Length: 284
Image 1 (cartoon, helix red, strand yellow):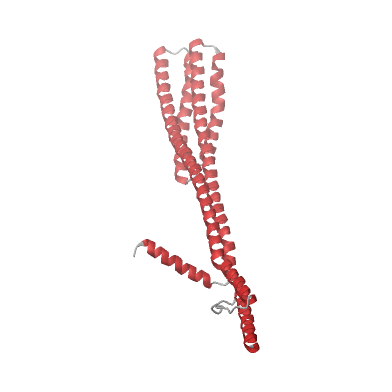
Image 2 (cartoon, rainbow, N blue to C red):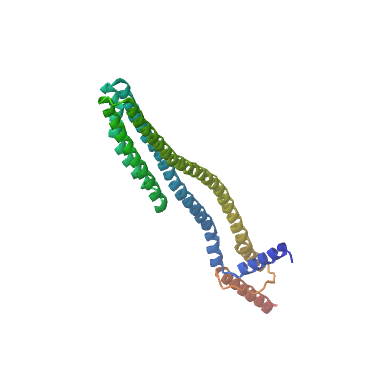
């Protein structure tokens, strides 16, 4: 027996059960079918909105992280640029970018910590905080070196000592750049994944809307078919019975098998037909 035959027999069995159901139960089921379609649509929409809302928030946070990494790195570059300008000119005004950066860097590190603390999941959050703490330590050492470089220039230390001092600062600056770059790259990769996820959710939402529409149409067709198969056919049979009684014909119908509203009406019509038949037989 192939699957088509199995499906056919199961459908026939379902119709037999449906036809035995009382009209009140049939009406309740027919009313419930469209509600099921609406509930399914609502569930899909709610799930999609929740997923999309969380991912959109995470995307905004990742964008903020990437921007904060850049801001911190730019502040370090400004500090180094101001210090280099002072070493070349010995003029205090060239330290303005350095002074601004030194004042802003602690606030930018604190802002980064606050953004990282919003990271979902304890393990990735602690890993990022640890990485930032390591970077902060190097930044503090680098700022101290930059400050010492100014003292070297004021005290007119030998150029060899100043050069060695600057070489150490360069290595530390490269390390800061590499570490911040690694953190930024990691969050940029996650950002790309989140953007891909939200695009996938949008596509899924469109598909779900189409599927929900199909489900709604299918449910309405099933409702119409079952309504026609059950209630409409029984009402048509009642109409035909009344027409036969009015035409003086004998009813050739099976006794009603249901005690629902239509079944009771069928029983009353059968009684009327029997009484009318008995009256006709008496008159004869």
